[in-house]
Image 1 (cartoon, rainbow, N blue to C red):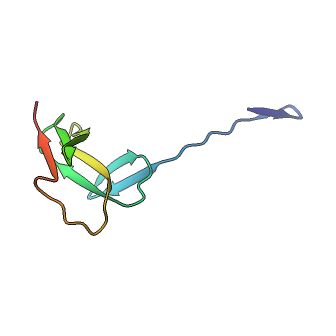
Image 2: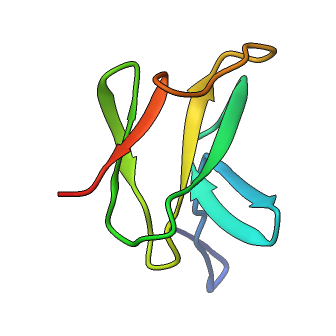
Length: 84
């Protein structure tokens, strides 16, 4: 915040990405490569990539998985979901 001549200015910064994919809107950290939209059909499902947890599905059963390698074909078992 700064003041000059009776005027006050505030500056706010942010970094990240907003992704609109197939009608779903996601806010995420900056994605320098590829990402995937995972649809589980159920809320609160833990999503794994290469046996590491990378997120949970939202109320609509969707989750965005960032930081994937572009042009790499992925599927089971690279990304898997577990209901707990």
